[in-house]
Structures are given as C-alpha cells and as structure tokens.
Amino acid sequence: MELGQRDPVTGRNTTGHEWNGIEELDTPVPRVVLFFLFATTLFSIIYWVLMPAWPLGWSYTKGLLGFDDRAVVAKAVSDATAERAVWTDRVASSDFATIQADPELMRAVTQTGRTLFEDNCAVCHGVDAKGGPGYPNLAAKAWLWGGSPEVIAETIKVGINSGDPDSRVSQMMAFGRDGVLDRKQISDVVAYVRSLSGATPAAGDADRLKAGQEVFAANCVACHGDDGKGKTDMGAPNLTDKNWIYGGDTQSVFNTVYAGRQGHMPHWGDRLTPVDIKVLALYVNSLGGEAP
Amino acid sequence: MPNFHRKLERSAIGFVVAIVVVASIGGFVEIAPLFTIDETVEKAPDMRVYTPLELAGRNIYIREGCYACHSQMIRTLRDEVERYGPYSLAVESQYDHPMLWGSKRTGPDLARVGGKYSDAWQVAHLRNPRDVVPVSVMPAYRWLEDNTLRTEDLGLHLKAMSRVGVPYTQAMIDNAPADAYGQANPDTDFAAGVAERYGEATNIRAFGGKPGQVTEMDALVAYLQILGKLTDAATASNVAAKAE
Image (cartoon, each protein chain N blue to C red):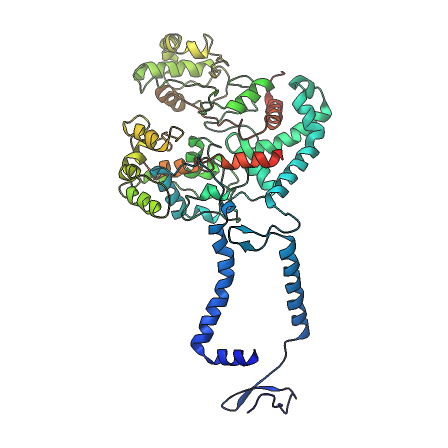
C-alpha cells in the first residue's frame, strides 16, 4: 500500500502502514492543538527575551526586564516596612511612657505584638503567655528581672544564659548534688520555702520550719533576699508568691534545691529588629507588667 | 526531511539514540550551567563544616523523615522572609549531601531555627510536642533520648562526605567518635579537641541534658541548633539587598 491512499470509510489518507490488514489513518493534528503549540512557542520566545533564560557558558542572558527574585523580595519587604512606618516610626522615636499614653498607637502595638509573640515566644511561654513547667508565666506580674517595658526589652534583646556577650546570667547552685547541703537540710529548707507562700504543708513540715529557716538564712538569702522576695537584679525569683516556674510541690522544690536551675532564654537581638523588640516589650508588659 | 524521519523511525537503535540525545538536551541546558556559572553558588569564606555530632544528628533527621514535614529553604517571598529570616542561599547547603530543601510544610521551615529556642525546649518538644505546643500535630520522638548514639562509624561518614567535597581534614576523620562525645560533654577532656578542630564558635553543650553519655537526642538537638548558623553569608547578602 502506498502513502496517500484513501480510506473508503472516512475519506482520509492512510499512513501506508499495514499490519495484518489493519491500516492506520493519517489524521492531521487538530487545529486547536496546533494553535496552542504555536501560541506557547511564541510565548516562550518572548519570555526568553524578557526574562533571565539561556545559559552562555560562564554567564547567562539576563533578559530585557532585568528581573531578579531577590530584588523583588527586597522591594516587597521594604515596601511593607514603609507601609508600617506610619506607626513604627513613632514607636522607634518615642519612649515607652509616651507610647503607652497614646491609645491609638497602643492598638497597633498590641495587634502586631500579639502576632510577634505567637510567632516567636508562644512555643515556650504559651499563646496565653501563662508559661509552663520551666517557662515563666508572663501574665502574673511575677518578674524575674523586672516588668517595666525597658527591662523586658533588654531581656528580649540579650536573653538569659543565652550565650550573647551581654546576656543576663543567672544560675541556682546545685546545693544537693554539689554537696553543700545534705538531704535533711534540703528537706528542711524546702518545707520552709513552701511555707513562705502559704503552700499546704506536707506531713512533718511543721517540725522542719525552724531548721529550714536557718538553712535558708545561711544559703539562700544572698540571691532570694532576707524575706525571700527575690532580687530582680540577679533574676532570683520571689518565693513568697504562688508562682512556680519549676513546680511548687515538695518533690519539685526538692529537685530544684538538689540539682539547681539554670533557665535559658534565647537572645533575639539579631533575629528581631529594635522596633519589633520594643513592640514585643510593650505587648508583654501589657499582659501583666509594671508601668515604665 | 520526511524521508529522513521515515528512515530514522525504521531503525530501532538509531531512533532510541535520537530520543536519548533530544531528551538529554533539556537536562544538560538546565544542569550543566550550574557548574560553570560562578554566581550559582555564592561565596562564603566563613562557612564551617558539620561536626561529627551534628552530622549524626542530620542522619537521624533524615532517618526519622523530618524532611517530609519540615523544609530547609526560605524562599524569596516576603511572608517567608518576614517570618523565618533572610532567604536561603545555595552556599548554605553546599555541604548538605543530600540537600533538604523543599516547599511542603506541614511544620514550619527549619532553615534558621538554630538558636531560636533553648536546648531544653527542643528536648521537651521532641519528647512530646504537645507538652509545649498544645495544638501541634508532630509525632513524639521519645526513643531518641534512650538510644545511645552510634559513634564508632562516624569517621567513615566524614570520610564519605570528604569524598564528595566537604573539606574534612584527616584529623577530623580520625577523631570523629571522640569529637561527637566531647561536643555533648563539655566537662570532659574530649571537648577541647572539638573547639580546636571545628572552631571556637561550635556549640559544646549537654544538648540532651544527660551528661556522661551521647544519645541520639544530643545529636539531633546539636544539629537543629546549628541550622542557619554555619555561615553569616545570608544575613550579609540580605542586608546588602535591603540597603540598595
């Protein structure tokens, strides 16, 4: 069979192939498919000219539009920054008291602050800022280093035991593990410490209070203060309130005294901008802080 | 031309060869220039290599399939840059074999998670994510704490990496198991060698919080804490881009 022979049923030419009497129609490609083939080819040629496309050994064609993903994202970020500048400039240039006195500005601060908090802080301190075992409650007015926005901003910037050169440093000794106190002394001081905040005494605690007070006076007052109210310049917690970072039951307090504690808060100075830190400090302060 | 095609399609071997040639043009045009064009991979003179412990952590990350939910590539998109930090550069994964890029994120991108959270948080989170993030859907990885890390073959891992271009020295390869132990046990004599071979900036801590041993938890946390910290190139180039 020769190419160009007509099929009697459809009237189309056949390809000339024939297998066991079965022949193949030479149907042309539908117009619409051809159209898309030409259209997309044309598009790609225009695209090659306009956009970065062809490699040329050690370089590549940059395209007439000079498109660059990195320039686009840099512009998008700086546009967004400029858009926010209407209120971030005022945050940057005002002190904390002025910002707090401006309810309109504080509305923007609280809104953005909440987003920043959820993105960065909430995994440890919780979405409600109430903390958890090992992570302080920020909504309880119980501040380790002070609750004014200035102090909170500094804590966010440098962190606690964070490895930053300016980091806040605080460590509770391992009184038991390092052999400073024996088991009985620890049990005594635990009973005394728990009594400071009016915790329900465990069995036998009443007899330990006097000895515990002596141990406390000899070992703990340097950081926690004579009255056990803590010292914010050392990050030593107040023991007379009902807030416990590591738990307030007898076993938890015993573990704390025995093995010591060294909390770790990362430093955010190189991750967040100064304005972000200021906004976060104001937000955290608004949860339960002191006036500046 | 039609004659040529008729001839070609009737020669099986010739047609196969022609298909291979045509199909490989696409790959060649896309892949070959990456090796010849200089700006494909940026320069990062301060780039350091993974320590043996971090490399072991990386292997555990791959073994546990973390990459199925977490990418390590911040794309050049505004929302990603604002949430995760400077976009990723190719040079940052130049010692990653294989790389762990991607865009499918059931969990957040981890390209810059190093130093973002404390070791204790990472351990608590891997032990049971719900303890620290109540809405998390991540599985718990409790066994990492109980499994002692296999360190004896780490030298071979380093050697394999050096074959594909990671600049490990012979001393690094020889001391790999000791360095893995030392990095997780800062109070021991082995720790000094880690700082000496890998630089003072190396994290040397009891990552998993169990002194005296090296667990898989130590390795994975050590790896997570170095993500995005091997070089400052990204911060530098992003800052430059912003200044323009």
